[in-house]
Every structure is written in structure tokens, then in C-alpha cells.
Length: 102
Image (cartoon, rainbow, N blue to C red):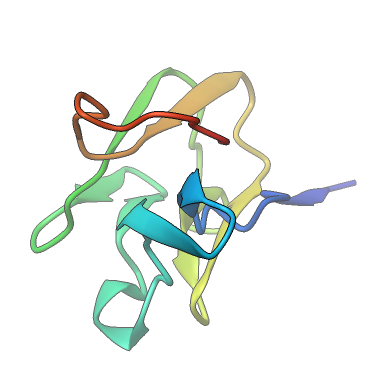
């Protein structure tokens, strides 16, 4: 039976840094807009064109097109990946920020 593992945290990766009690600064946010639908690994096809993130699927198994680690309908999801797979955000710097809350 195939299980769909919706990546909790929706990989929105909203890193919010509280600089003071009155405000916050968002350094990175990915809402997986419609331009990212189908991006990632689907079956034997890896497509990361136009995205600022990366995936490491080298320890996964994608034996048919029903197996995926990709954006579907603006949500990053995984189904029947057969191993450990990793989603990596783009790099960003937190230097110069204080009172960081991630």
C-alpha cells in the first residue's frame, strides 16, 4: 500500500526572525507557487529547473511514475520513495540578526 507523506511544515520554510517586540523579518519563504508544480523527482525524471531549492534522492527508489518527491498542487509531497530523501532550501545568511527565532 502506498503512503502519501505530506511534508509537514509544508516546506514553507518560513524562517522568522524577531528583531524586536514590534516587528519581524522574513528572510526566506517558499509557498511552492504554481510555477513549481511538478518540480522534484517524479518516477525516473528529476526536474529542478527554475527553483531555488534542491533534493537529494540518491537513497530513494522511484520505480514508476506513481513514486514522487515533488511539488503537487502547490504542496511538496512524497509518495513511495523507498528510502531516505532530503529537501534542501536555498542558502541564506543570518549574520547581522539578533534574537533569532526559527
